[in-house]
Length: 139
Image (cartoon, rainbow, N blue to C red; front, side, top):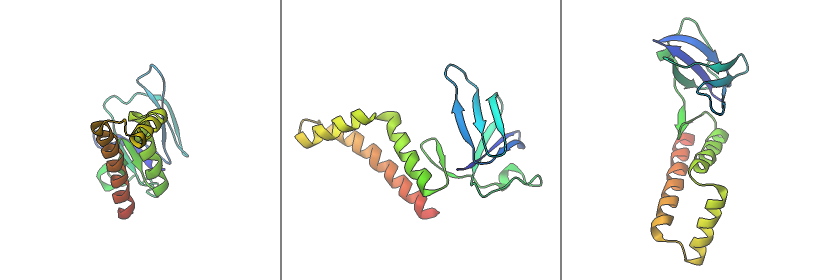
């Protein structure tokens, strides 16, 4: 799980190890949970975020540019092969529910699905899989 650096004007404000972000319904502020700190309902106005590998540790002598950003699948930062796989699934789910996927596959098998619909779905999924393979190869 990647670490999250929250910074403003190049100054590191928070360095959260193994960070998970939780969104609250009907609120613009988010919660950030990590092994070293918890930020509840954090107001991110004017802040920027940088996701870095989990093996990078906070060093007060480093600037924000000294940290290497992780890869992303969609908008999800990933560090490991397991995270790549989970991010691919989560990104697909943002566009297609499990029921939608089953329906598309069933219609494709039965021959009732329009070619255009299949191409849209298949291109979307295959592009995510290809992106995930590239990330895994770079690791």
